[in-house]
Length: 79
Image (tube, rainbow, N blue to C red; front, top):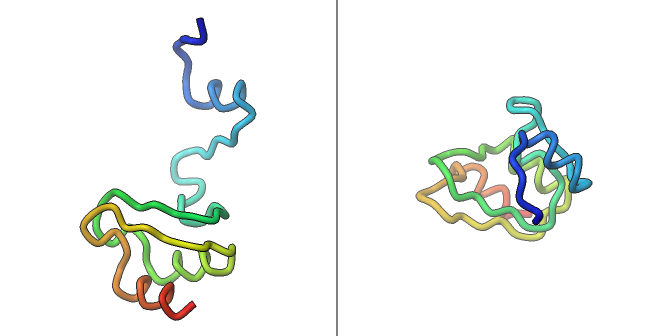
């Protein structure tokens, strides 16, 4: 069976995935093509939006009640 109990760092190393320690890097700073934000309000600000734009994000999806600040939304629309 592929079921086991381990910490996230161990799991990601076994799966050849990256692990980011809490507080080490904001999720919006990790390069990606599509970003889905489904958490708290104003999670992504203008600085985060500009970083995502410079990293080449193709689309940003809001799956919660305004996870992006108004300034972030405007920057992404303008890009």
